[in-house]
Length: 430
Image (tube, rainbow, N blue to C red; front, side, top):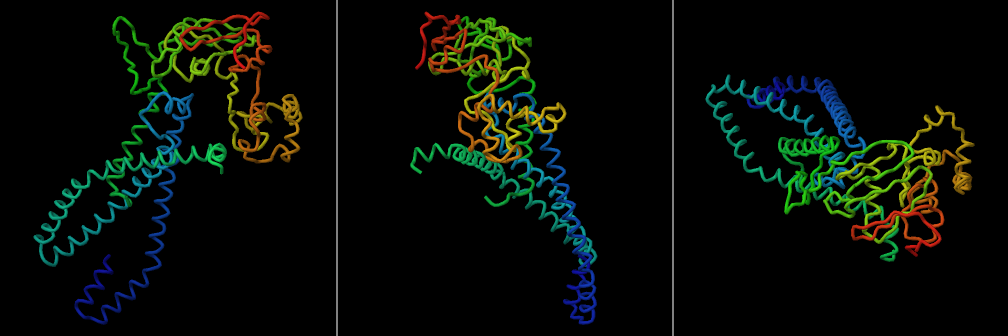
């Protein structure tokens, strides 16, 4: 800064010697100036990285606690696109906060140096007038730019929806093939304010979800009485963890929106007993498993069940983790867990043989083969890869009745029956 001022003074004074002197001094200082600038940039980038790592770790510790990642999208509608917020918004927020220091400190230093030079040259009146004009124009521009903050929030919302639509297109690209036959960067202060509100919002939502509170526009969580009917209160039921038994005691089977599917559900199943759950679409078959898996809150009654780690669910579309063939078989354990438990690869091979998947080991090139298993394996192979001891089965197929001892039939009108399967049982399904 001082070198530039001296060079300008030499040019105005038409002093060739002074100009050459200051110019050579500036050239000599260039390597040092370049080094300092690059060190500052490296420090800022390192600070951005550290800030983002800590903030992302903090948010994901809440996001992945229990079933919060499910609840934030299915039970609560305050956050429309949590994936966008946890990735891009966190990155922009961290970048803006870190760059705020350099974007404020350097202009303030420039202003201070110019004020000192101008004051010594023309007196204090000129710099004070210019500084007053700068502050006044800054306030006016900030006032005029307020709508841009709202536009930025809307932009981020649309970007999240756009990414979500594209992710659905990628996920369903095979289905789509068969069906179809084949504003520039904002003002730093406004960006920080906007991202701060979004980061604060997701922190509050994650904290409330982890404590069992959620909000939806279609249901009130305050217990009120209307026409003598008491409203259902999410989380008012009791969950008791006990091994070798599943018992529903006077549980209203209801959706998070408060739609009651079955008013009073009561039945008991002991370990080793296979039960077939049947009924028309929308009767509550999947809802039963969501309540059993503690994805949906209880609206009353008592649910007795084994702990989360002792119940195994095989969905219609099993989850295939990223990694090797070994990772698919031992999930959610890691190779380190396998070695610690002393489980050999021969034992894993026997597991594959039991579900008729032993050929995959040779076909895909061994345990350490890395593939896109979600696309590579067929639907039946993926289900057999995740298979366990079946206790409840949801199906419309009448051919499966012979593999079960009891059936739980829902009629879709709030009624159900839980009875043993006998030779006289009228099968429901196709």
